[in-house]
Image 1 (tube, each protein chain N blue to C red):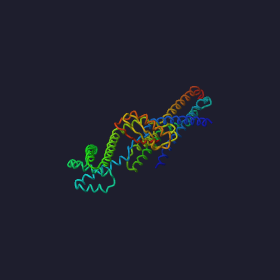
Image 2: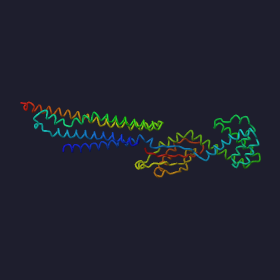
Image 3: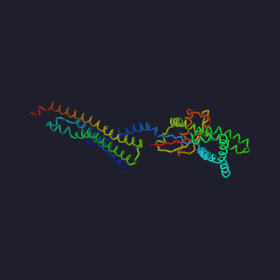
Image 4: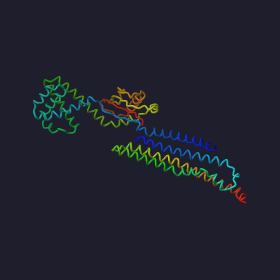
Length: 248
Length: 145
């Protein structure tokens, strides 16, 4: 009789203590594990332009030795190659090398950025010459490609320098919605926005939803809050940002 | 492997929980008994002592053994974690650390059971001594004569 009573007491006390412990542990866990709970990643900026860049570089590498072998061979290539921009590149390369053959020979595989800037400078001159010659329409495309490339390289540079800061800023403002935490909602939302030099953000939109409206909403909110602490670019930069909500 | 891990985890924690419940039950039962005891009913000191110290050894046992069971759980947990790492071939620090942290929780639970048990045991022993002394003071000499 007495032992049964004592047993019931004991059970209730244990229940209370365990309940309190789990509550305390849960709240502690949420606080400390928050960094792990929310993962932010900044991915590549634009896929098409990146691809294009690689093509250009490839072409550059190819055309340089070819030209040294034979001038006309490159021109033949230009004839049957369908892609205008690629062949354009080669023409520029030619123009370029007619003037400074030795210089181009030397820079076969130097570091990319340096090469690119030199390349750009020279290209501009080359474009001018091209216009003087008969290839007016083609020159236009060259200029386009030049613009695109310089912008891309700027984006690349921006990304490389400030990716960590953007990530930290967004992470700082990101909250895991309580209801999502309770319900165990997880997912990756891909957000896309354009950052302007005055620090403004435009075209903020969800590119790919996580499947839960509230997660998307919180991600957008975090980015618009964090935008003031983003490093300012000197040109508009388009950023694609996957935000992963994950519960442990 | 996952199942063994879970079994170890829940097994150790479950055993500790059971021990804790038993210890507390005995302690409460003893406390209630001490409060309701009528010392004049006992003719012999030895009989009274036996009656007073009934089941108290359980608390002592639990108090001294709970840390060992906790340690056993930790050792098994670490063992399994290392085994996992060994079979996978590379060390993922996240996995190791969470494995070790979860293993250590068994030790914590063991200590959490042991400390109150030891305290309760000491309290009860003191109470037994007090009651025995009281009995001796009041009835000892007269009953002996």
